[in-house]
Image (cartoon, rainbow, N blue to C red; front, top):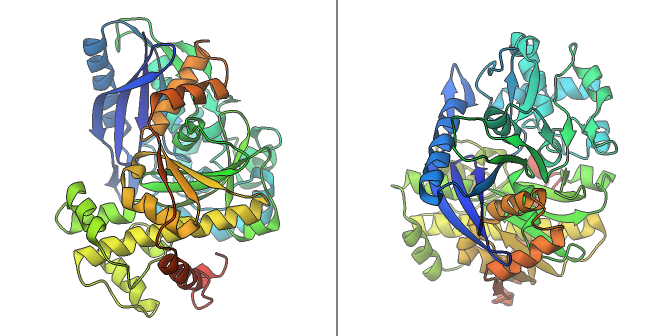
Length: 491
């Protein structure tokens, strides 16, 4: 039995999970879980890296206590775009900024005056978005210029963690592809973009493909010799590599706090239609591309449930099981929901400005959010079909969000397509599969997908209540495509 540790760090929590491989199946054993959230200091939002590594180290220590000395390796995956700046003393220049810090927004027009948005898109495949690494670095250079002058290395969050435990500096391809600094043609840093926007060199470490042994974990964290593996650093890329789907006719959704909806393509799709519709292209574990939309996942529902007294998952499930059809919908991707003081007030404000009745109870708020998520995901899947010029016959979903069975059924209803869910721990499985490839235990993505099929139970949802859903799809599309609000003009 091989034991491999996956560190899956999300924006709301982190986990250390052991993947136990018997040659045919992988059994996951969650060893340690801890909360993660950004902290506010001097009007900016940061990640507390010291706290994160303290928790991860506690998880590694607990894994050794439980599993003994049989761990072969460890890999790290996280969300995209965020990074750390390392100085000449191998220390962080500052806490890593969080993508939820809005100080980057004011520089959108300044950057576009130097490089047109469509040129940035054509060169990188990425949607132009203020959360992207490019805009974070540009804002840091404007407001904290000493940080970049002190920096000797720029490492993305999963690679920063790998460096912390191995002293090896490298940036992995899938996480680098979220930055808007990577040339999709060269799969390395775009010097033209960097030279145009920055007056000093950016010390971005070299980009390498995943499934690679970096070296041994440093002494002091674990007693047994453990390899640190370069896995797909972006948690979505990890998740997609663990979905046992047919790339040619299936869409995917990786669902958690965010929902990532997309389709795998051989090359980035960089047409004007993709640019105008604010879709993006990011890398896969195999060097292909994901044409996708980063949509709001359960963030809105998570915030609402806290405001209403930390509503339990069981209560939420019970509400959805008996809820009636919604009388109002929201656009989950509207900026009003990004980081409001009150999510309840934000929903009320959105309904008011779109001429809809406001929810009047917790039950109505929850049904409104979940039904709107399903309709939005369905709308985006239809867009992907158009933009990729290829049919989508089924939808594969992975991630913790698939435990919301009502949403999965609503999505099947809203798309008229079969929805197949599993695995819940898609990112962890993808992380583990990459480690097995680096250890030469398996040889290919296809072999890994076969192991996943042996290891999980899929759930299949088929469309229901077609009369109601066909009726509301049109109303929801009108809401998104309304010209009355400039945010909808390009949806």
